[in-house]
View 1 (cartoon, helix red, strand yellow):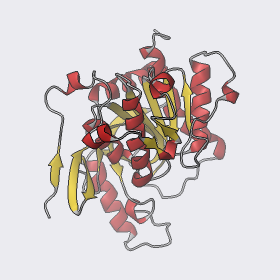
View 2 (cartoon, helix red, strand yellow; view 1 turned 90 degrees about the vertical axis):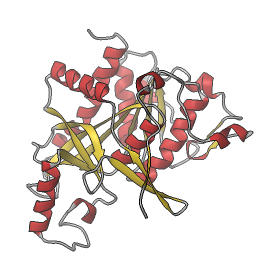
View 3 (spheres, one colour; view 1 turned 120 degrees about the vertical axis):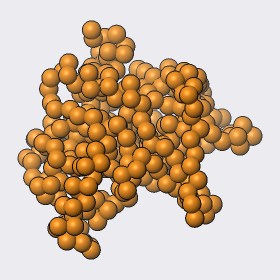
View 4 (spheres, one colour; view 1 turned 135 degrees about the horizontal axis):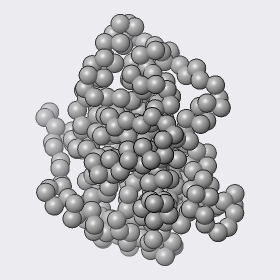
Length: 313
C-alpha cells in the first residue's frame, strides 16, 4: 500500500509558528475534560495556563535522572531564586515521565524509543496548547552513536532520516501507512551552531540523524543477542549512511521532528556522539569522560536559552 504523505505546512510556516501552540485533533474541543494521564495532569483539576503559560523552551531527553540534572543545571545558569536541589517533579503522580519547570524552561524525560517519546509528545503538545503557550522552541537532548566522528562531537540534526535515509516518519494508522516530513528548523540549527562557536568548548557539526526502531540489529550492531548480518554488511551500511549525510544514530528523532513540524513548533535535536560506530559498537571511554560528554548538549542549549533571554551578549 502506498504511503499517504501529510505536510500541513506551506509557505506561511514562519508566520504559523508565531501562533499559539496548535493541536491537529478537532475532537479535543468536544471533550469536557482532557486528562494527560502520563503526566498526572488534567484540564479540569489543574490551571494549566497559570502553571505553564509562560513556557518558551522545552527540553526533553530519555533519562529521568539526566533531565532532573538538566533542570538543576539550567536553574543555576539562569540564576533563579530558590534551591535547585528542591525542584519538584510535576509528574510525581506517575512513574512514566518526569517534568520540572524552571522559569520559562520545561525539562521532561521521554524514555527510550519512538513509542515512548510519541506518547510524551502527544501529551506535551496538548499541555502547551491548553496552557495557551506561544513561540515555544523544543529541544531533544541526547546521546548517540557517531558515524565518522570523534567521540564527544555534538551533532545538531539537519534532517531526521529513516532506515532508507529519507527525511520521513512512517506510522500505521487504521491500517494505512501515514508518512510525515521530518525536516527541522534551519534557523534554530544555525543559531545553535553559532552558540557552539562562541563557547569553543567541544566540536559541533550539523548533519542528518538516522532514527532506528532498535538499539541492536536495527543500528547494525554486532553485540546484540541476535545478529543476522556480517561485519562487512555493517560497514557497508554505515558507509552508505555517511554518504547520505548521516552523522549519528539514535531512536527518537523522526517522530520528534514530525510531530513538532505538523503542529507548527520550532524544534531541534542535539545529541552527543559517544563513539564512532566505524570503530566498534561498545563504549570504551571512562565514566568521567562519558559524564562530561553527556553534559555537552545541555551546555549548548543553556547558552542558546541565555542568549534568547538576553542574559549573555
